[in-house]
Image (cartoon, rainbow, N blue to C red; front, top):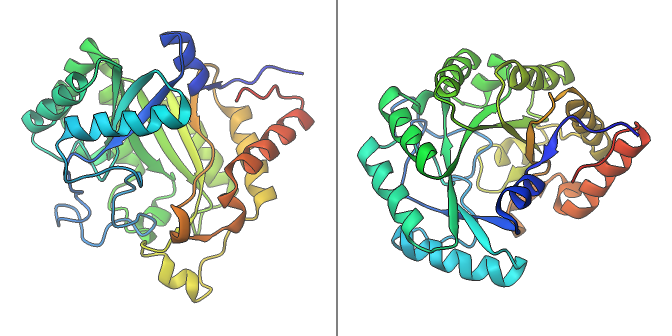
Amino acid sequence: MSEAAARSFNTHLRERFGCRVHRVAVDGGFSCPNLDGTRGLGGCRFCDMSGSLASYAEPKRPIADQVRLGIERIARRTKARKFIVYFQAFTATHAPPERLRTLCDEALAADERVVGLAVGARPDCLGEPILDVLEEFHRKTYLWIDVGLETVNNQTLERMNRRTTTAEFVEAMRRAKARGLRICAHVIFGLPGDSPDDMMRAIDLVNELALDGIKIHNLYIDARSALAVPWRRGEIPMMGRDTYVDLVCRALEKLRPGVLVHRLTGEAPGERHLAPEWARDKNRLLEAIRAEMRRRGMAPFF
């Protein structure tokens, strides 16, 4: 059985920190350039109106309180001993640099078990002043920047009201990588209009740019997203589970050695998850991916 080229992010964290490490999602009160009119209005059609914030987060509380409460809940459930604070909701880099610096400092000081930060970003919100702040925290802590690529097909990006392009992603990633920053690219498989070739080209781009990590997940329909309306009308075709498993395994075969795989599934919270039904059972989906990897002679790494 051949070794998989990619590696599990969770395994990497255990090796680096010597214990289970878990992300704690917080809301820094950020907006998005695709909501406030900077780039557009209405947001990306696949995004829910909470900016993909974790269900347990309490956005009205100060950052330090959100961190402590999140750690308390997650530690009880997962037995994690160290934590990475994840500025998940909306676009954390769509803010004045000094505000981002202040919030990152507050997050790091909130609890002695915090060992790093993750910052959600769009490629059009990574100007040099923001990159200065991110490089500063890269030097002082364990920092990841989570950036949405979603797809390399610009027509699909336009249909999804993404209001950014693949060229902008490439340009921003090259500037960020020139500073040595860790980048995790987000990719969605199954967006309306995307072909399997488009999805594999996204993986090729991650390799070409020498990005450090990847999050792949299936398109899912959140009841609060703009896609919910056309999905209810039967206008949004959903990928089958077997097709998704095949594409994920093809992607894992293509990834260059050392890329850290942060996730391979996606679903909306609880009753907000409309489709696909198979995505509700994360464990069963992951086991199907492992089984297909074994069938192909790949060694499952997660």
